[in-house]
Amino acid sequence: MTILVGYVPSPEGEAALRAGIDEARRRDEKLLVVNTTRGDAYADPRFAQEPDLTHVREDLADMGIEFDIRQVLGARDAAEEIIDLAERMDASLVVIGLRRRSAVGKLIMGSAAQQILLGVGCPVLAVKAGV
Image (cartoon, rainbow, N blue to C red; front, top):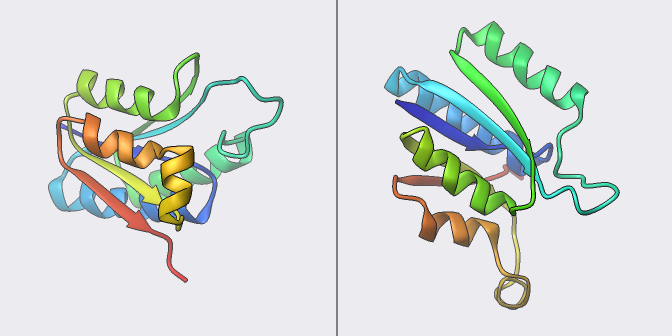
């Protein structure tokens, strides 16, 4: 089985990655790190650049974690991509990072985390970055 981590180059993404590593070790499962964007903006800070991915690859290799990294550039939003990948990969767990937002912000803007929580068929571990 596989543990899927939704990764963005941010403190929340790093927290999700660390939690995913802990779970992969505990369960003795492969880690799938997913970074995605629609590609509809000139610059998307959530889309990892090569130095970000190199850092992830090196950390995981040094730890002896079996892993795969996928970057998806597509027409769908990140939540839809993660939900689809979790289903196709038969993920045992999805790990996502949460950022602090107000209830009004979530209501107006929607929430990828909320979509993942409601749409994925396996357990979801939602983590926050440390202060």
